[in-house]
Structures are given as structure tokens and as C-alpha cells.
Length: 65
Image 1 (cartoon, helix red, strand yellow):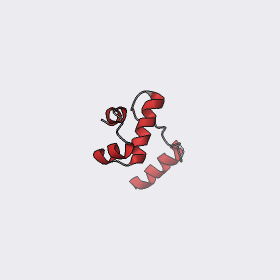
Image 2 (image 1 turned 180 degrees about the horizontal axis):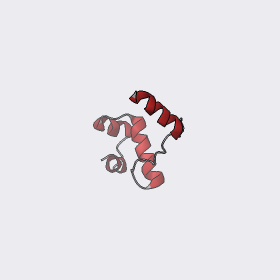
Image 3 (image 1 turned 30 degrees about the horizontal axis):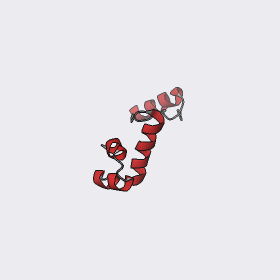
Image 4 (image 1 turned 90 degrees about the vertical axis):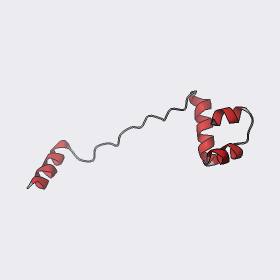
């Protein structure tokens, strides 16, 4: 809907108002389409570990007692 309306020359403000989203969100999706050619969510990398497996095991053992 967003891209179709955008291609029909509706303003970003009009489109975002009709969809109930912010103009910033609208711009993000249009930019993503123009740069990547799709609207998939970007890949997210998991956060790095904060504890070692050994620390996890000690913590789990402490909670079992």
C-alpha cells in the first residue's frame, strides 16, 4: 500500500496519516525499497555473550540448591 500510494504521487504525510504511521517510518520503508528492492526486515545479529559457559553452569548450579 505504501509504495503504491507513493508511486501515485501521494505525499508522505498523506500516506502516513492514512496508514496510521509516522512520516519517519514511511520514509524508512520507502528508502529501504529504493536501496534494497525489498521490504524484508534487516538481519539482526545476536548480542555477544556476557558470561562464559562455565559461569552459566555455576549460576545454574547455585539456583538448584
